[in-house]
Length: 143
Image (cartoon, rainbow, N blue to C red):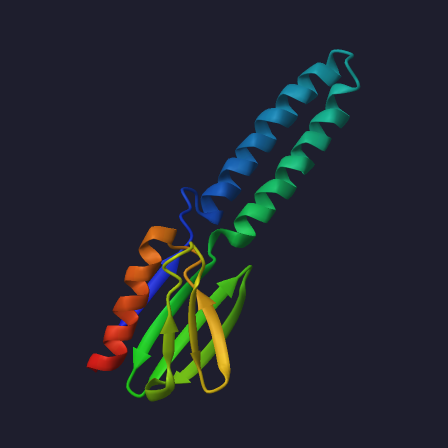
């Protein structure tokens, strides 16, 4: 069994790159036109605008692929979390895993076992987290 939890992104990093390139072409084209007609300060401000938008797009694109994957494989529960391109994997022995849903508050789901714990559910609506916790618990018991 496998559960994939991903960030809800309407634009992929590749699409964002194309959008940024087209924005650069249009902005620099307009700025170049006015610079050629004597408005020399338009071009430096257009470059500053493009740099600011580029930094914002870079921050967005860096986290666009963030997500969590929980896999039940034989005698192990594997939790993989990707944040800003960094992948962290934790493996728990199936018979020792405890799933602790936080039903009274919109906190994350705690998966613990063997002295380790990890919090999952960042990319899931808070009202769906208890259902996910129950589903993982049932899968651990059912086998």
